[in-house]
Image 1 (cartoon, rainbow, N blue to C red):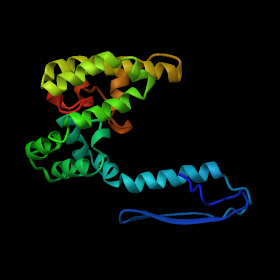
Image 2 (cartoon, rainbow, N blue to C red):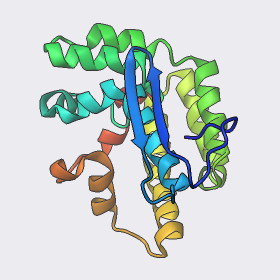
Image 3 (cartoon, rainbow, N blue to C red):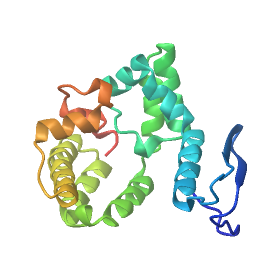
Length: 206
């Protein structure tokens, strides 16, 4: 994160307080050597901002009971529901409440317009764009309520997309079992994991 309208040089000392909602962050670097690392400063700004903005998310995954229940319910990953929707779901998990009502409310927000917006973001990524026809078929089936067809297409194709992305980044493929395991769990919890942890059951989110 940076402040493009503020000129900061290597000789400067920086003290910055900023907020996200009702949460505050303090960054300071008094730069005793007169050689401020702009790159490191912007990285630390970004880390602080991310921690403020997604504090509820970090708290939830740090709680083994809450995170475990979210995984068991099949809501990982949470990218599409970060924010108010995730907070509501996590609060129900933390309180030990049944999820039927909050899930039904959340699912009702995944209308055609929202799913099309998701699809547009997918297609902006080269690994997804190569699977456009198949993924479009999945979205059409989602709109028509055909959960079986959605899961059949998405569960098959997303693994290939992730494998291709990993291969392009690291120059080699990774085994399916290890790859799914590392994606679905934090480092301290990585173990044998069901594939469905990456998707909401009954094609609730895709």
